Image 1 (tube, rainbow, N blue to C red):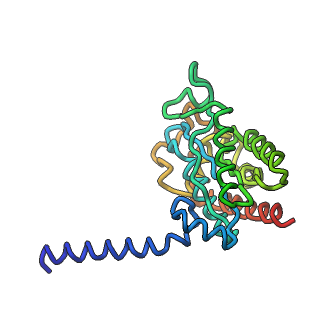
Image 2 (image 1 turned 120 degrees about the horizontal axis):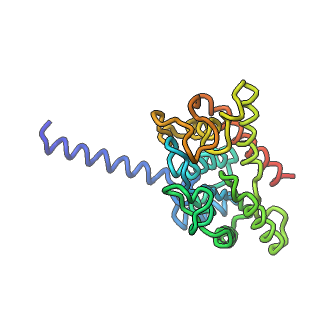
Image 3 (image 1 turned 180 degrees about the vertical axis):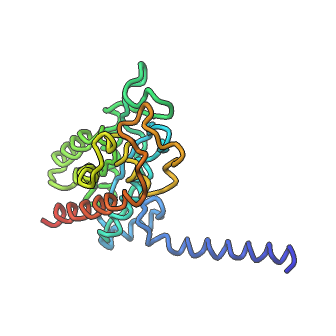
Length: 261
């Protein structure tokens, strides 16, 4: 085949791939993949639950990327939506409270962390939930992958449900984060110490991230350095898989119970 022939073949394959992807987009669980018209059709057809994944951009030592929470919550929210069957996933909220900026506290003491005030964070959540309700979603589900703002999610859900006169208009899905925390007990039962398991970027946190997406982890840098609570050195994707499965199954069960009492 000539160079021109190969070029035409490559262009043709790219066009076919684009056409297939474009045709499949209406079936996606990701709201941002849809057009406005496609979204209206999905809602009219009964897809009236939307998950709002909340992550965070923060330091995670030398071995986990800054966007760990964002990648993890997006992928897990997608799996939860797929299992529910009548749900979509909104874009990830990556800007969350992470400590004071000046002088820096908490994770802001380390490079790459992005922090916003609690009031601003809660206002963004409220605006997103109100927008989604305006478009016809009956259940707006707040999924938080980070422990530091769980109280904010609960407050926002409470305020909006009171304002709307509904019990489950906005659902703060505490079970999502609780299921992640339960992974600590699973590891402890297998003989890992609490010093290893840790609370941030340690064994548990690293194993869960690894099981979701291996590109989040720098295996050559697995060390308990400043900014890490725990010891990630014995973490692996295999170790984290059971924790990931539990987060998804527990979240799906809790949502079904809330929406179909």
